[in-house]
Structures are given as C-alpha cells and as structure tokens.
Image 1 (cartoon, rainbow, N blue to C red):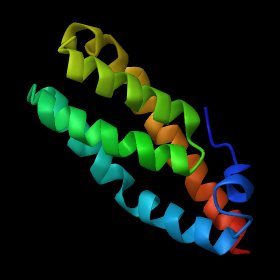
Image 2 (image 1 turned 90 degrees about the horizontal axis):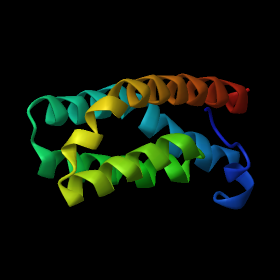
Image 3 (image 1 turned 90 degrees about the vertical axis):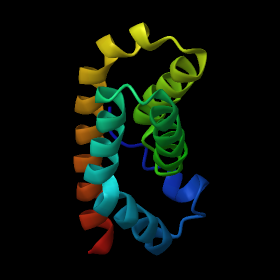
Length: 114
C-alpha cells in the first residue's frame, strides 16, 4: 500500500519539481479516473474497462504506486482474457487501494512543495 518515493530518484532523476508536476495531474484526475473505471465495470463495458485500467497501470507505476499498478495490470489482463468473474471479487480492494494511494500521493506532493 502507498507510494514508493524512490521513483523520484529512479524515474525522475531526482527532479522533485517534475515529479510534483506529474503527480498533481494524477491527483487532480484521480477521482474521475476511478469513477470511470468503476462505471465501465458497472456497465460491464469490458473493452472500456481494459482501456481505463491499462492507462492507470502505466500512470500509477510511473509515480511509485506499485500495488495499484499491479492491481490495474491484473484487471487489464483478466479483462482481455474475458475472465470477468475473477474481477468482481477484487473491485472493493481495488477501490480502497486507489483511494489510499491517491491520498498518499497528495501528502507527498505537499511535502515536496515545501
């Protein structure tokens, strides 16, 4: 759970300002992203669900939200395989992880902006 802040050094070459800029975009769109993924799931629009989780997988990984990225990857693969029965039981844990990661990201942004 949470965020691996070593990405500031490994993926952003120590450039905190760049990390903060990218993180703010994610933070500002995070709730809409989660809502879109959940809406696609609720509507059983699996192709949209796969597209949305694919985007989340990459974005969250780049910001050090490794567990969220793994969950998105799992959803993407399950969706592509048509294994929708395996997705349903994982949705609640996904929501919790997404919200926790988003809140952690906001805290880190605030710390880096000081």
